[in-house]
Image (tube, rainbow, N blue to C red; front, side, top):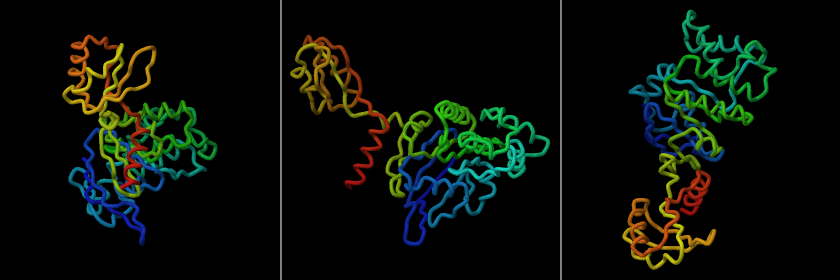
Length: 304
C-alpha cells in the first residue's frame, strides 16, 4: 500500500533522513521507533506531502507524492506531534471546521463528527472551548480530527503524549479499532507503546533505517532455557542444533542452562534429556522485551 524507496531529506549540510526504503501493506499497524531526532517525524511529514523529499520516492497504491499529493492526502488522517488547534473554538465547532477541510459532504458531517467524538471519548467535552481542555483531551481532539473522514491510512505522531494511564489504555484500544479498517503508522520513542499496539517495528537511528521486523520475530531469542533435576550438561553437549551450553544459577534446587540454539532444536533437547534419564521441568525459547532489543540494536550500530 505504501512504498518508500531510497528516501532522503537534507537541510543544508544536515541529513535528517538518509536513504530509507520500506513497504507497508494494507491493514498493518507499524511502529516508527527511535530516539528524538531519529527522523520519524520527517518521514511522516513526507508521506503526508507536507515536506518534499530531497531524494527518493513515496507511492500509495500507485499514487505518487509530488504528482498526486492531493489525492494521497485525501486518504490520510494525520495527528502531528503538536496538533494545531484553535483554542477559542469549542470542540464540536473545531471538528465541524476540520470536517469541511477534509471534504466531508455537509449532509454527512454531523454523523462523522458524532462518530469521531464517540470513538475518542470526547462527549463530555464536546461543547467546551479547547483552551479549557487538558493536554490529554487536546490530544484526543487531534485524533478525532484525523479520523473524521474515515481515512485508509492513519498516521499518529506520539499519540500518547500527555495522556494519563487511563487515557493511554483508551488510545491503545482506539488504535486497535482503527487497524480493522485502516493502515496505521504510530511514531513514538516510548517502547511500551510500540509493543502494546504494533505488529511490526521500523527502528530508525540518525536518519537511517536499522531494523525492519515483526515484533514477535525481533523478540525471539536464539537460545533455549532449560530447567532440570541434576546435572544435564553431559546430555546437552552434542545435541544436534545446540552450539553451546551455559550453566545458569540454580533456582528451587533445579539446574538451569542456556543453550545457544534455535527454537526448532527443542524436541531434540527434550529427547536427549529423556534418553539420559534427566527429569525435565522447563524448556522454552528465550525471549527479549523490546527495550532489550532496542538497546542492543543501538549498541551494534554505534559500534559499527
